[in-house]
Length: 338
Image (cartoon, rainbow, N blue to C red; front, side, top):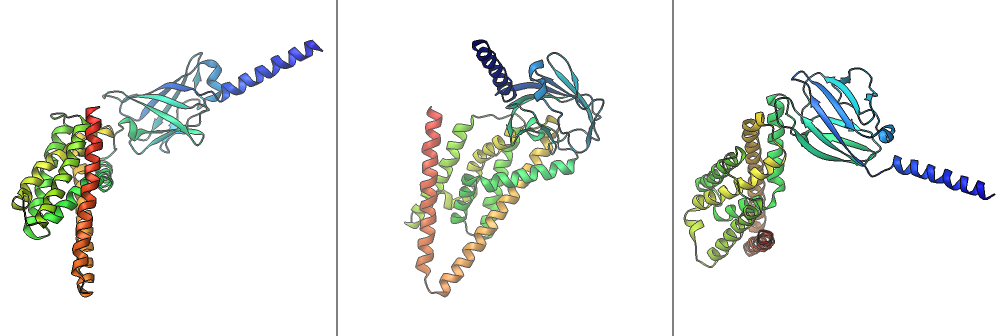
């Protein structure tokens, strides 16, 4: 009876060990090697033999197919997959790994370019390799233009601090040639530093840059408040000079966002041009919406003979911007000091 009991314990321990191995919190190192410029690749999964049953055949992008056995060539410590695509992998492609592992530390060796390493974690029972995170090219220049323009629009519309700065400028110059001149100065300035930083000629830590951007909004809000008291400062006398000076700082912020996505060296000019185009389009969209909203509100309140409410709404917006940007300034300054 005692022998049977020991046999049962050993058996259960073996089963539990196998189950644990199947769901082990493991991250495998893998290499994806681009073999020339004809869309041919080799995926090498570095995994011990006992874990290889949990490495299932990767799901390739639609324009790719395996060359040889789709189950891969299995050795003692690695599995090799060989596949070819109609064209080189681009930032729009994904490789889906239905592996019973927690993640994959993948290094992609692009032909003629530097290797890129990133960690992709398991989600919804698969590990998805998004080649945009591995500095893949965009494909044709049209695809690249669409990609970077979209990224530029998304960045400016999601960048609340940049939008608040533009909004503050609208309180200083409400329309006409002066508004066009001021927005143009801001555009030219951030285009200069965006280009210099992207090409590597200018580099500053992100923390002080972000703190200075918050300071630019605080400065404008203070100028607007003082103007309400009859004390017009530098911004009201030379708005485009101020817009240009602070635009240089905002350009460094834009550059940080662009560089974070990982740019192929061959696409830097394309990325710089169309990311900047996207930023300007997003900025113009925001300005148009604000101006239309202000016009509609003014017409509504003037019809109701309630101009004072319109003025109070303006003051509320200004103080809200000032308080928010002051909080960001304190928060980001503390990051710099730390």
